[in-house]
Image (tube, rainbow, N blue to C red):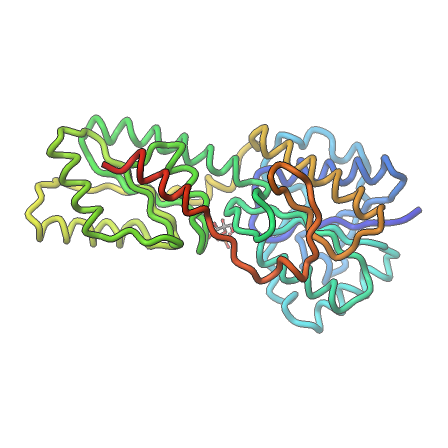
Length: 327
Ligand code: F6P
């Protein structure tokens, strides 16, 4: 019986469990034995494997987090530890390693695949959606829905108090979460690192909005642009200098609620499709690949072609957010 191992690495994202379930069940469906590795690359280095059976993954489809646990393991960037990880895989008789991870983990997966003789299958997950080569990553859709829900709640209080609100969202250096939730949540201004938005236009927009009697104003701010508190202080300062009569600007940093919660139907389906496809491609002889979704089609990409690259949101989407929301 061929053996595969599966791990989750990096920040958690809704849909990880759905993907674990899909890999395990597809593995057994095709006669493989599946081992879980605890805490991502940390477990590979520390030899923390355990047998996973199909019943072990029942009831987890709708659960956030990861039953395998996860970590950001710095040691994996060191060849010495990758070698230990490889030895542990070989000693356990593992024939292929499945890694569900984000950008940092992709680098580790690429190095492992280049340096050692073991097929590596990578499945992209991150709420940030910033992995090159795939339109969507597991967890992004749920995170965007969480942000949209928060925006509509904040809009109620923004309207009632006639206040400006800054909503800071995650995304690390990328603006995918901000842009999608800015469009879906009808934010007045969406600020993302990839496309600059001049400060004077923000000030003008606020001035015009309040002159027109607008009672709410929401700015979605990607964390990669600035932190909400600093941005708020800068904005108040600049508006005061222009003698714009703004009583106060409030801010909310949404933080880790974006990483948790039950995955959306979209993420459950994506995670399941990725998991099933990943195992099938492995059995078909593919190795050192990432599974991806492009134009709603499942594809495989060579790890060497996707690692270390930057994915940028569509300029058209940024224009869209300006055209419909910015006044
Ligand atoms: O990559 C996912 C993410 O949630 C980013 O959006 C955020 O910047 C980062 O992880 C936070 O990382 P940590 O879990 O190490 O605090």
